[in-house]
Each structure stands twice: as C-alpha cells, then as structure tokens.
Amino acid sequence: MPITVILMSTSAHHPADAARSGGTVTDRLVEANQRYAAGFQDPGMDARPVLHVAVVACMDARLDLHDALGLALGDCHTIRNAGGVVTDDVIRSLTISQRALGTRSVILIHHTNCGLETITEDFRHELEDEVGQRPAWAVEAFRDVDQDVRQSMQRVRTSPFLPHTDDVRGFVFDVTDGLLREIDPSA
Image (cartoon, one colour):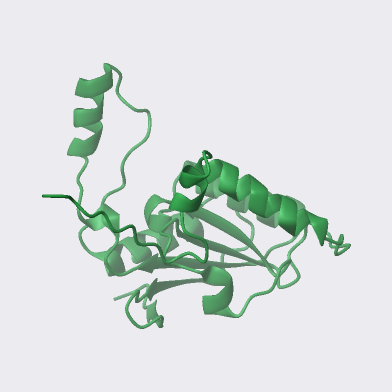
C-alpha cells in the first residue's frame, strides 16, 4: 500500500519547494533575501528605537510581535529566547539597549502553550548524558506562566545594570486569540 505524505506549512512559501528544487530551507531564505534586497532602500534610520522601548519575548514562531503590537521597523529593540525568560544575556542586551541606545521602557511577553511548560531541568541532565558535557546554561523551565512573567519583571527591576526600571510591564500572549493579558507584578 503506498504511503501518502502531506506537508503542511503556515508560511507563504512551501518549505518543501527548496528541497524539491535541490536546495535547502536556508537556500530558500537566502533567495528570498535576494528578492528583498533588490527592492531595498536604506530607510536612513538610526539604531536607536523610535519608541525607546525594548520587547523581550519568546522565540515561538506563532508570535508575530510587530503585527501583534502595531510596531513598524525601527520602533523597538526585540530580544527573543526560549520562553522569553530574563537571563543574564537578556540583561546584557537590555543594558546595551538602555545605556547605549536610549530605550527607557521594557515589555516582557510570554505566551500560552509554551514549550518551556512541558520540559524540566532534567533536559540539561539528559543532554549531559548524551553529549558528555553539562550545558553552562539553565533551561529556565516553568509550570506557571504568570509567575514566570512576575519573576522576569523582578529580574529586570532589580538589575543594577539597568538605569530605567520604572516602566517594566509583563504580559501573556494568548496564541489562540492573539490578545495580551497584563500580569500584575504584585499578585
């Protein structure tokens, strides 16, 4: 009995197109960049975000931050990682964003149905068993997204490196309806 494979994608271009033509997904993306660059004009922008805001969010592919927040190119700095967790590297990026590039506000965005809610720190131990070396980083898994947003807000607000911590707000993005729900830091 023959097996039928159906490939599905939410992107405008089918990911299998490049593979069928002998290329990779990366080849497809580079080709898309060449089309983009052909019509590109330098917008003459500065590296400083127009709205003086930095957004820290999860890397989840379902979050289109610019559309969800009504942002245009040049409006904000966007810092993304697994979970949108405030790690030392996020503090590093926020410090540069504030001290060198003029941002004053920080928006933290986690989301519903996050992959970090489904794993534990055991992931690091399993990785160490597999590759023979323990990762230097923590997984930063969590069970309660609201509480993790509160923890992230607290990490930003208490960092000695950040001069602007009076406008730090946290949200949970609902991946089913696209709405942000603000998290009360004191709850």
